[in-house]
Amino acid sequence: MKAIVPMFKRRLARMTTAPPSTILLRLDWIEALQAPGCALCRLAQQKSLRYVDTLLQEAVTDVAQRDAWRAARGLCHSHAWMAVTIPHSAGCLALLYADVLGHDLAPLASLTATSPAPPRWRTRRALGQRLRDWLRSWEAPPACLVCGLWTEQERLYLQVLLDDWQEPELAQAFTAAHGLCWRHTQRLVGCGLSHRHIQAVLTAQAAHMQTLQQDLQEFIRKQDYRFASEAYGREADVWRRAVTFYVREPGAAGSESVY
Ligand SMILES: [Zn+2]
Ligand SMILES: [Zn+2]
Image 1: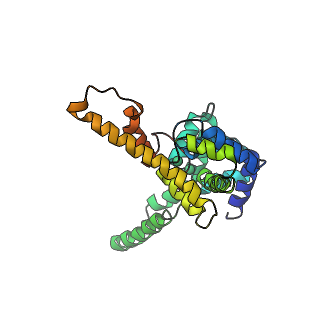
Image 2 (image 1 turned 90 degrees about the vertical axis):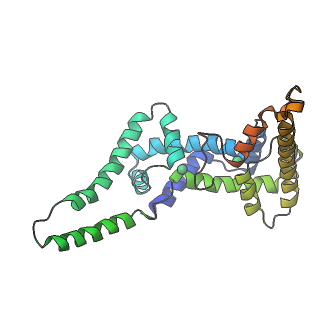
Image 3 (image 1 turned 180 degrees about the horizontal axis):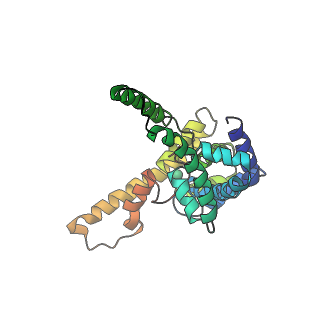
């Protein structure tokens, strides 16, 4: 089974990210930075949706990929609900989850079967042990396939942000945008511990966080009855932006293992 997952990943990655040119990744950055919010969260959602769509189609028809789907018991919470939003996904989801459920029902059948033989206390102890074994088999479930793919892709995006920081278009777009969310700030630092541009990128990110703090302070000031007559400006929605900075928009999905 272990060999199947990397094979699946290679195949899906080829279909969804080819060619993995850093120029294309940089262009993705610049485009994503045009919209409000964390650009990497936006990319996570866009790319994950493509991964999920491809995975649904492939896992239905390809035996190896169906095995990988079953081993992972489908997708994580975010990506499973993302799959539900994909048009015409109902048939694929029904087939794939029927496969998973069939696989999960088999051990339950042996656990629920009654054995007539030995004294009750011994039967109960044996059953207890088998139930514990069953529970233990759930302790380390395989990671969501889409989460795994995006985690790798996200590292590439952060690497491009760091490597290409001296490209004026990228740095200017980042500076003019809204910066990264807190989780992706941490990921940036994790990816760039000894990178020559980490300090410059982090400085630009810190400036976005300072702007957020200034907007929060201004919003708080206007909550005071003495200034209640003042009209709200840019800070009007800052309370929401602050929530989004620390946790993603409701329903947004990228990678559960990363967030
Ligand atoms: Zn983010
Ligand atoms: Zn996932």
